[in-house]
Structures are given as C-alpha cells and as structure tokens.
Length: 233
Image 1 (cartoon, rainbow, N blue to C red):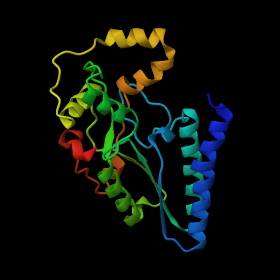
Image 2 (cartoon, rainbow, N blue to C red; image 1 turned 90 degrees about the horizontal axis):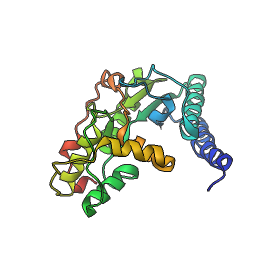
Image 3 (cartoon, one colour; image 1 turned 90 degrees about the vertical axis):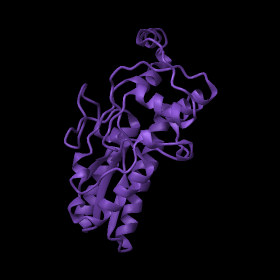
Image 4 (cartoon, one colour; image 1 turned 135 degrees about the vertical axis):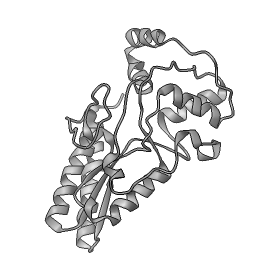
C-alpha cells in the first residue's frame, strides 16, 4: 500500500504546483485565456436528495478534491492579478471513447456476463460525454462573462445506477435482465467488507450536480447516455 503522505504530495505536485506553473508561464507568454479542468470533487461533500451547484461549496473530501480546490483558488488569484481570462470547469463523471474507472469495469463485466444487474434505487448520478465537455471548454473560453467563474458540467439528465446499467447493456448488445440483485445484499456486503464499501457507494449512492450556470451561457449537451453505442466507448 502506498504511503498516504506520498500520495498527497503527488496530487499536489501534479494538480497544484504543475498547474500553477503552467498558468504563470501562460501569463508570461501573453496567453489571453486559461481554462482549468477541475473536478466536482473540489466542491466538497454531497447533500442527500439535492443536485449540487457551484454555490454549494463545502470542504473537499480526500486529497484529490483538496488538491483540485487549491489549484482553483490559486488560478483565480493569478487571473485576477494578471488580467488573464481564467475559467474553471468541474466535470461530472465523463463518458465516451476509452472510458475508465467504474464505467469501464461495468461495461467489461456486462459484456463478459459477470456484472450483477443493479437494483433500481432511484438514485441520481450526473454524467457528461467527452464531446460535450469539449464544447463547454470552447464556450467558457470565448464568453467574457465566464472570466473568473467556476462551472459544473453535466449533460443535464442525471441517471439512476440501474439506468446506467441498462444503457451499458445496450452498448454491448446484451438483453436487459428482468431481475436485479436486492439492495439488501449490497448493504450486507458494505457492512461485512469495508474494503469494497467505497466501490459500492460509488455505484449506488447519489452524485447529482446542476449545470444550470453553464446552461445560462448557452451550453446544451448534444449527447445522452441512451444515445450511445459501442463505438462511443
């Protein structure tokens, strides 16, 4: 297991120090606009039953979120002092070609037949296609009202974990099972095996965000999870 202090140092070097140095070089070389791709994790913990927006700033959880938030604050300061246009985007879960993380695991598991059908729990998880994220980057880089602002980016349609599972079945050409693993089984596993509790939480808990602020600039996602096919992954 990696030393937690070394992990924290690595996040700071990459997410904070390298980013700040890049911004300073941008200022020195006359760059007019700097768009930082942060993370929704920089906004802190989630409130149950609510889609978080940019004004819901809580203490970030974990070294990743803390490093992203620190970078945001330093970049906004650089922009304010130098006059360089600085905008920050906090993407929700990004999907598209060569998807990584839990989506990749789910996709591979469904394709091979070992990933269990998730229960419909009515939870809400925000996502955005990589093409729409690129569209958002161009938008904030060109809009003067985005200077010094933070924007959450989603496709505007939060999905339940079961809806994500069903969409993944369609992506790999598998029929959607008519049954699901009871939620109580996941709850039991969370209790008896804390090591995978985090993974289950990532699958089944709420992670809902609002991109209304970005939409007010004219952003409108062109893709949704239901539109996807295997070539998009």
